[in-house]
Image (cartoon, rainbow, N blue to C red; front, side, top):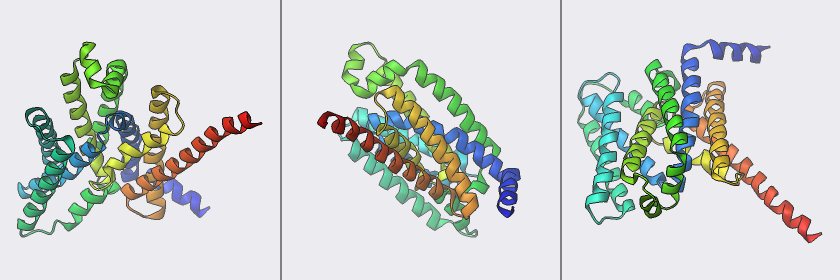
Length: 285
């Protein structure tokens, strides 16, 4: 009876309503983008964008923003643009560029935070580093909803070009796919999604929701469309399930979401291996 009462209270809490809606929108969104992130080997890219947000948060505090979301998104977009520019204008390898910008932006953020005086930012900083469901506001929820709608329609509208681009960029260019424009659009959407998801998951863990659901879906899917559908389902279950676990166990929301996704990954990996072994056993009979 007490458990039912606690569950009822959980769904009537305004901060939990916002957190669950954010997870409902951002979980599938991150998982959907994650399918193409994994296919294009851009996991380190999303990690760089998320860690660069630390400098944006620090700049926001330094400039006097009570909620440094706008400076965080702005700086993340600046870093993403710098990645694309350096990739096009220099001979540096992609992983070198990403490592350079990741370490530089984190160092800049730490320096700015160390120079701030007169106010203790430790609590606010922890929220951005590890996620905080209490800090999620309605603007974060609606931005997540808009991104999910726009990105979902855009990706399914451009599914064939994006699939070809992910598999073979040179071939896509030969076939007349606007490679440069799609690359910039994808980077823009991925950066906005990562920056928006930081409130829920935190800077440290946000890449996990992009990488783990598609990895789990890959163990069970036979083609790209199946992987997209399963990835979205796993992202939804991981996001919403992790948020519920976070409330029930009173643990950080980002960590609970990641661990829920890890459990889903282990289950899918086990089911995938069992399915792969079954035809081999039938052939041996």
